[in-house]
Length: 147
Image (cartoon, rainbow, N blue to C red):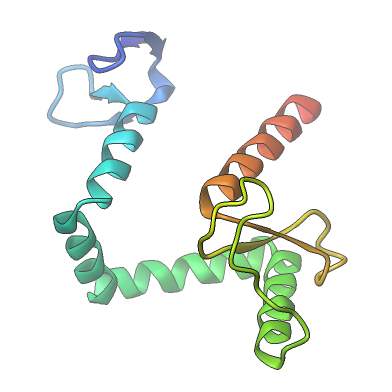
């Protein structure tokens, strides 16, 4: 079954829409991609930041984070181990976090990106935006090669 998103006006498969019991067809009127854009924009507003902060401090938010961390440790132990090694190296001074992104050269807080988790101290320092783009490209590459 396919449906047209009321925001981007593109016809998409029903799997690309979240469920909504209040709708006749059981699907939201916006596709997941458009809904995500709206949510990201909202989180950038002061009201959205405050709302997110309150949720993080609530019992439901803490429980969600606890479950998410457990799943990460269970599903990707090599990632968690590499992150821990990098954080320890930063704390002890073995690694220094630069003040700019190696990709776009923007001066900001940067994140450590691992090309290979078996080499935990071999990292690229990227801003959140560049890091997300790279992760998306790698996921797409793996999806194409594996399936």
